[in-house]
Structure formats: C-alpha cells, structure tokens
Image (cartoon, rainbow, N blue to C red; front, side, top):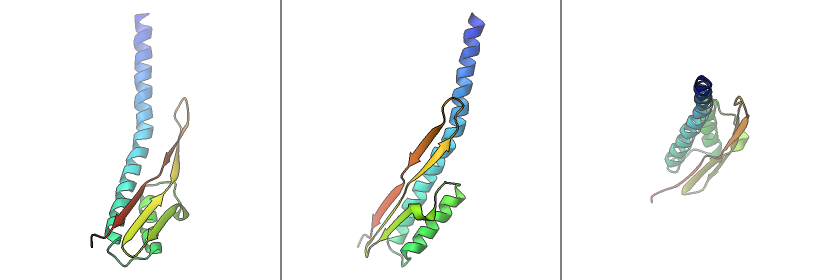
Length: 114
C-alpha cells in the first residue's frame, strides 16, 4: 500500500511537471510579446511610422515567437500624440488529461510627454 501511494505521488508530480513544461513556454511567449508591444508603442509615439509599418513590426515579432496570430488580428491606432496597439489570440495546449485553450489579449497605449 505504501509503495502504491509513493507511485501515485510520483505520477502526479510527473504530470504536474509535464503540464508546466507545456504551459510555461506559452505564457513566456505572451510575456515577451507584451513587452515587444509596449516597447513598440513607446518608441512609435515619437516616430513617423504609419499604422501599417507598426502592424508589420508587431506581426514580425509575433512570427518570431511562433504565436498563432495574423496581421489582421493586430489593431493599431496612431493619433497625433499617441499610439495604441492591441491583439487577441488563443493558443491550444494538449494536456494529457484535458486539452485547454489559453486566450491572451496583450495591449499597450503610449502618449507623448510633450
């Protein structure tokens, strides 16, 4: 009985480790993408880039992170003194017991200081 409990504990612990192995990279990619969007909005509030150029730069970063995101899902609004960037995407993770869809909506808005 004691060895069965130990085996069950090892199996549960292994399942948790494997689940973390599948889920953590998805959240890390989202964090990196959010950071890239924030940086892009901060820099482009002062630049002469068009909305399409900003969208292309954000889409290129999404592709480098292997995010399931199309250019049409990236919304960019550039006004005279501010930039707003947002996107929404879902990542499907095949967990052994229960597959899950993780939805993310990274966004950033930045205004000029002057």
